Picture 1: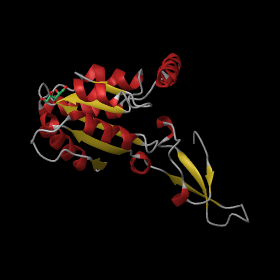
Picture 2: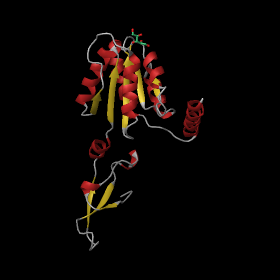
Picture 3: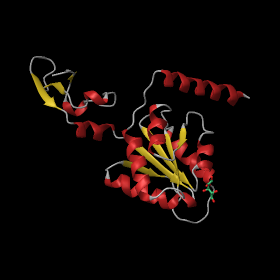
Length: 205
Ligand code: RB5
């Protein structure tokens, strides 16, 4: 057994800080009699269980030109049993992308375990708009490498895709990579801190 954590009951285990490499380790669990503190029940917590408890809320938003791809993404994520909040738009009728970028950004900022996926025609307008909201790191991604680096280096909290250039297969691959990737921290954390510094400095201006 590589790691033991003692917790009051399996139901109250908080997996939110569990590192990926520990997701499938044995956990020692009090067998309900904390006072005696003698008997332990050992339970293997499967990766799937921990994944279900830590799955993020995905906020989806698009303008009319990103509507088709958003619909595809919503369908894709629903099949993966993801928690989804769709903030619109709800049809291909013309709307203005800044409004939907703002909706996604505001929802993403409401909690730690939230990520956004935002689409417009090119992804350019939506990413520019979303990045005006402090704390938002919206990454316009064109391929799987961008998707991986946008998390590993930039810890992007919103993935932005262009509805016009992206086909279904590419969308699926990019989203798969985006969810699988992990922030590397270290020098990248320092750089993100620098971005926060810029936000604070120029918000005052
Ligand atoms: C809408 O025509 C289009 O301008 C918008 O979806 C987006 O591409 C803007 O950057």
